[in-house]
Image 1 (cartoon, rainbow, N blue to C red):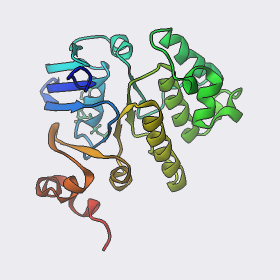
Image 2 (image 1 turned 60 degrees about the vertical axis):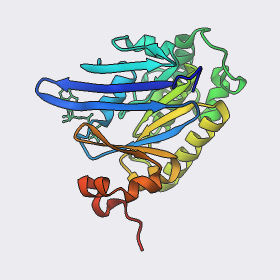
Image 3 (image 1 turned 135 degrees about the vertical axis):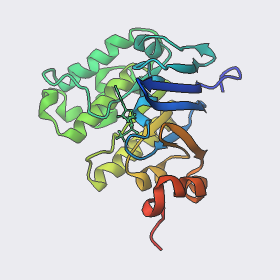
Image 4 (image 1 turned 90 degrees about the vertical axis):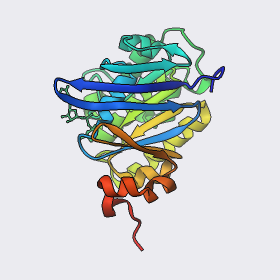
Amino acid sequence: MINGHALLEAREVSVRFGGLVAVDTVSAAFAPGELVGIIGPNGAGKTTFFNALSGVVMPTGGELFASGERLTGARPHQFARCGIARTFQTPRVFADLGVAANIDFGLQFAGRRREAPRALADTAAILDRIGLSAQARLPAAAITPSQQRLLEIGMALATRPRLLLLDEVAAGLTEHEVESMARLIRDLRDDFDLTVIWIEHAVTTLMRHVERVLVLHQGRKIADGTPAEVVRDPGVIEAYLGDEMREPA
Ligand SMILES: Nc1ncnc2c1ncn2[C@@H]1O[C@H](COP(=O)(O)OP(=O)(O)OP(=O)(O)O)[C@@H](O)[C@H]1O
């Protein structure tokens, strides 16, 4: 908490698309340094909730606060100014620009709003941190999809975030790549005291790496607890998880 406030708080946030309620009165508060996962089946409202948390869609109900400051109805750049950065399900990098130039763009976007930790102060340091120094001069279109995911994380880091929203950064990665991605995320959280909220389809992978999990189902939050609590939650099991979450005997 900062002065008694959560870094980010959603209060009864709803997002409606016509007759469809994609996010239904979801409340959740995120404290500095937390690593939180969001799971739920296809169409549960995970990405739409993320879009609301980052200002990409405007909630049709409820309120959002960053460190106590009301953000409801703010534009995405105002969310960014509050230190909220995100990645997208399909990486949004500038394909024709070089890898380093993509990071430069993030740094320019950050301006001099906040002091950067030295390890994130310039493009070379960020590329080193995400393991893409050797690819610095390649066009972003020429690197692998998993490297593009890393690049997108680098671009988000360049904006000097306090909160990082990661949307399926492990999708399509090999098992080995998923493990190194998870390690990178934990290390970033630890080293820069970031709050990380991470959506992932691979439930068991996510559960191994986060300390808290929110479960969305048909737009509603049906559970919020430690991975151990959530896997045992009868409501979660009944609603949709079934055998998917039970570890093999
Ligand atoms: N821009 C939009 N216009 C209309 N309906 C939308 C829009 N975006 C999402 N939806 C609908 O809202 C619901 C929630 O979608 P959302 O993408 O948030 O779910 P999700 O949990 O992220 O799913 P997935 O795991 O498949 O990415 C779905 O029924 C989806 O079709």
